[in-house]
Length: 334
Image (cartoon, rainbow, N blue to C red; front, top):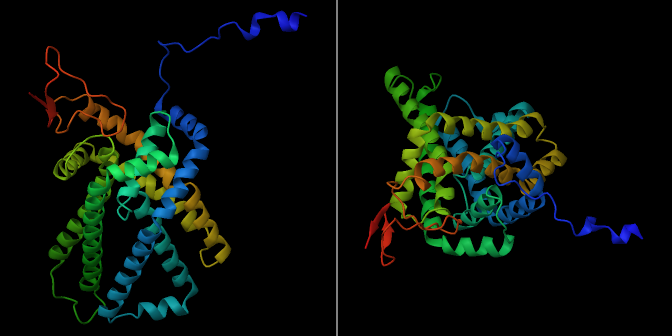
């Protein structure tokens, strides 16, 4: 029969054109998202399980700062307003949800080494490399244990200091507060507000680059923060745009859903556990990795070891150099 004698099953297919024009990043993002959706949900749920303690810490930190502000600002009883006014209570719950989801997805509050393993999986999705969720997650968590813990502690301390500074500023800047009103002139308050906003934005920007850089390059803690700071300054406007986009992705479900309804609250929790941090992480990786490619991977003078840290970019030896040496801070040392 012609059906079984046909060469349609043995004839080579069209294959992939090696000279094909690469797809635009916007199109490739949705292709990767569709192809990796189940694995993205899987690694997102793994991250959620490892981040429960940090989620609780972030929520407790926000509630504690609000309570601290309430204890020093005698012009209004915040606790009473929240308990008696349903609209104020709804705003308070939404603020906590936004704070927790946003700052654990960027992430200022994170589980350190576990987020490093999570970021490595996201980077593998971006590069369309094969990945084994549990094995690679555990492996990269272990290999980044020390550096991840240091970054986690530094971020946590900086975030708490900025939150306390914000609460103190709101107390002294409130003209209705009879205890502290008029102690500081307006230009001092303006400078304090400016510095606080700058430090907050800088901390969030740094975390766009810290963990992806940690799982891409073999860098020290000093190099990690120095390189991230330099990239923040060089790409401050696109980085600010990414932060605003991430904030919008978190704010839309939080603002437009009534959080006082427990069913909706559970739905938000399921959305967070199922996809949201992974989705935001993939978007950020499509922005961050091309920046690495331009300023670090393709830049021989960059402050890095050229040996990739589990990322797939292989160490390249300079021309006419013996193999008995190493890269150190972007320079070849015999």
